[in-house]
Length: 157
Image 1 (tube, rainbow, N blue to C red):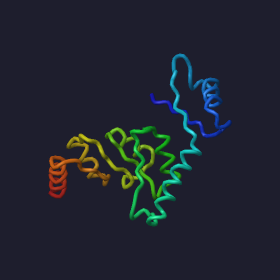
Image 2: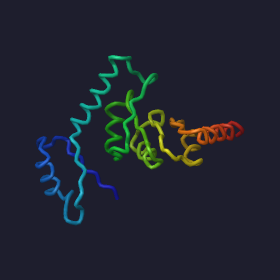
Image 3: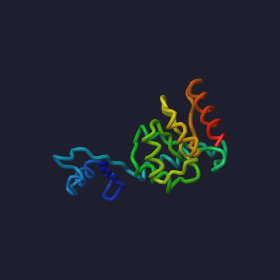
Image 4: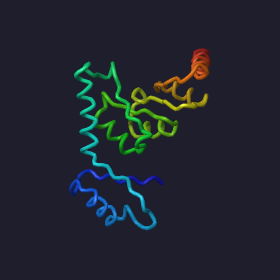
């Protein structure tokens, strides 16, 4: 069972204080010695800074660009939910594994804001993504042929 503890500035910005609170509230113990702590205010500020920087180049809308946050850095549902809620029109998720695609979907990221970018996608994973209108980064000509085959198969039904 994945346990997520997100420190969102509830007490102060000190990591020491956040860890002490996590221990006191039972999130960290001898039997569960690991906690994931994130300053969500800082996370939101960094996302907004990225969006603002790109706005100077081209206005962002749901039609012309998606900032895809790479889950491999930090693949937890809480981060996906924050992106879905705080930046629904300009941010999405880059998933390096099919499991990350499923985490993103379960967390409320719309399919149109998910990019599946695994280096070794299976036929079934590709078919799922194509059927569900999830973007796929195609890495090589073999994979491109699989995508063509899937689209051909789907168009026959």
